[in-house]
Image (tube, one colour):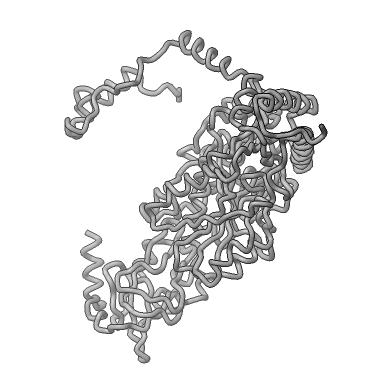
Length: 466
Length: 131
């Protein structure tokens, strides 16, 4: 069957078959007052030549800067084979096929993805992916409330060390569902969530505690202590994890005595390039006993009536097309194409390769911090261990420094002051395995000159070595 | 024709209720309901001690075809649930009125049972529904 939908002849045949004069007539039922007419602000279409020109111009404007920016999306090396294979005709679809079982190759790929993700998170089950890490957190919050039958409350503790965008997205999605998201403060010295911050919730009914590892600041949380605290009080634990870091750190399934119950996160670091905020993909894994509360598609392996191995969508009774309003979620799809890339990425790297990537990220970030803090106007904000990013405080106004470094085609990091005003002139810096020692030296060199120019302009800082 | 014991009471949502000698009410789904749903794969039960209100969804029976809510026919406190179903949900198919029971309620108002159908009325209801 050719995938050319709706030729003029097809359209005419279909309209004749149902006795409609034209496509417009199909919309007659919508009252005129509700119809929007022309869309204002949407320009006419462009031809191929025009759109190529426009996109090239936009791409050039990007400038391919040297990137020390992380904060949720990370600039990793993607082996050339990843997208070469992903964009083959057999894989090149962004969507779960509707006749799922007719596409055994796609289902096998998702099954293998799920297998790898359960290995990476240390949990029993994975779904076929969600839209992104942020919406994944919202889904995990709703799932934990459904799954925690001991708790009568709809209260979930959400440390402020969780990515601010994730917290906002979760709030947007759950706010009309009677869910109370309680933000927890962090330790101003360590940048982590202290068990002491949980003290005031002692004896209260809590459905779940969210823990991000490493947290938004790149800092490592005391995941064991926090997990055990929550479990001892009947709360479930939602781990928000960086997939690269999990190759090096103990995965959520091994936190504390019993492990986190649900793990979610942003899958972008696994073979998805940085691109204007997306599309990325969210991963979600959980313990076996919560599987019926898990949103999204799940692929299972089975045998057909002749005893041959095959793959199938499973546990669909949880889903919207069967359970309607009682479904676990309105998510009935997954990020198929990006999951394809991630599966190929993980296959090419293997467990050892991913671990080496994680080690290299950590090592380069340590070198970056060492190089930048040689400048006496730059110091670490927190004193706790970090993975591949950490905040640095500048003793000069940070916005000006960032603007000047942008002019050198360098992305120096994420300005924390907007989301965390108490941190003042703080910059969240990140180095992945892609940042060489020369890149780091270049950043330090530019930073020293920019800071020197600013201090000459009247900064109160006195050189320590004078 | 499905099995409809005459001594039980039935709800339009296909639950049965048995008024036990000790005053409690045992609840399950009818033989017709299990037959329509097909092979059970999972049963989600309320918690013992949970307070339920008549016509409230408090359990889910999931088959290979669908997951359906089970509504309690009487208000009260859940005093016992059929734990055996967590490992053997197929008991609901095999013995809907016996080993396949779901939960037992201490009713706060046993007269709520009067609002339910008797066996004959349920048989008529099923016949009418089939048309």
